[in-house]
Image (tube, rainbow, N blue to C red; front, top):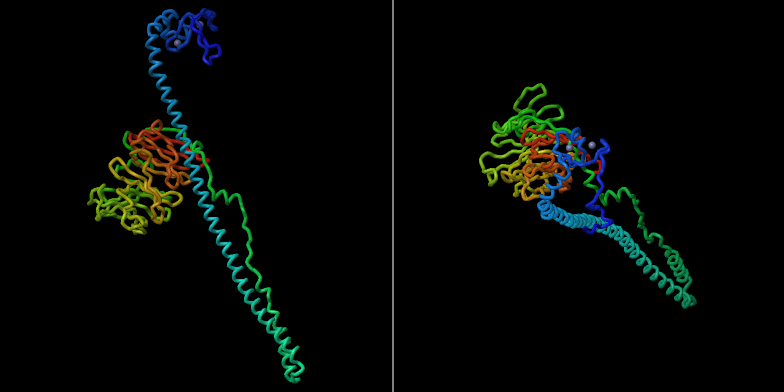
Amino acid sequence: MAAIPVSSEYPLRSAQEHIPMCIKHDLNIDMTCEDCDEFICSQCAKTDHKDHDWKTIPTAGSLRRRELKKTLSKVKEKDIAEIDEKIKKASKQREGNKKCCDSEVSKLQKHYDAIVSKLDEIKKNLETKLVENLERKNAEVSNKKLDLEQKRDHIKDLVEFLEDKHGTMSDYSLIDNLRDLTNLVSNTDSDIERGDHSVRYRRGDISEGSLDSIMGQTFDLDDFSVTETDSFQYGDECLDVLEAIDEDTCLEVCVTGKGDVYVTDFYNHDIVRLSPSGSASTVFNTAPLLPAGICQSTEGGLLVTLIDNDTEPFHSDSKSRRVLSHVTLTGDVVREYEYQEDGQTRLFTVPRRVKQNGNTDICVENRTGEYTGELVILSSSGFLKSVYHGQKLTFDPSDVVFDSHCNIIVTDYLNSQIHLLSPDGEFMKYLLTENEVKHPYSMSLYQSTLWVGDNQGLIKVFQLNTTQL
Ligand SMILES: [Zn+2]
Ligand SMILES: [Zn+2]
């Protein structure tokens, strides 16, 4: 008999065991149900497991014995190898976690150093004010001191002169000299107090709250979770726009607070308004440029992405137009965003969907190739804040929404993922992956409810929990 470890966590079964009884039927357990992986009695086999694949224990046993070598070698070769792989992954994960933590700590250190150097600068400025006052005041005092010394010497000389010469002096001269002396003596109380150091330092408040807000805070990505609450099918075509009902693929949609719906009509170069009553009217024409994306501007009016029709989409030249335009509801241009600060580098290759964040930043889905793109984040004044390229070799953004904390939620169509970014466009985590969403194309977020539409008409509804972020 093989040695059996006594205190093993998984007690190995010995060869001899008493035969257990069925609690339900008080019969010997001498059968096994292959469907339920349970030992049963002959009565169980006739009742609860009636239509199941059950066998007597000896039959099942000899079957197992015949397969034993195969079963064990599969466990040895495949299952254990798989567990080893997971163990390796766990080690890697530990290393990765360490790296991630180190990088966050170094960000904190960098910020701390920046604060300290700013504080240092402020301290130096205050110190300079104090020292400058000292220098000015002491220069004044030195002058006064010199003046007094000169006067003192003058008086001494006069006193000496009078002591020596008063006998030979005329009365007139004596009186005159004594008057001079009185004048000299009374002229020495120049107000020395004005030379006192006059700059003082008053300390500020060290309020914990303001220091905290300067230092920043930590947050736990695990606290940002999503739960699927519903899903339904809407036709079987790609859901281009979730706010839309059933539009042509060339239409982009924007709903304003008044309930008016603005759409871009790509082929006719039109921006069209659909009123709540259902009538459609062309608001303005964007020719010769083609309108692509549209959204409401927080400053009023609309943001529209426009491209020219004459140059190769992904090979722009000096004649190309790739513009984000802020226009009034009547089509007057308020501002155009086309180049970076240098006035030469283009902001966009092929700008498509555009959305404005609650913090007024503008996010533009910029196509860089047929299956690749990036998310361009601009301040409302047009300053390029950052460009998000995704986490893998390819990134295929198709839609973007913002949560109440101005975090950015962006789809990655080809990789079947939805990324969560900080308001600055820094990757935080995958909010949803292909287990939950396959080829997400469009999104809509209302408060904490996120709708995700895919390329086959499936809409999934998720609840966001963003309490900590
Ligand atoms: Zn039974
Ligand atoms: Zn069964």
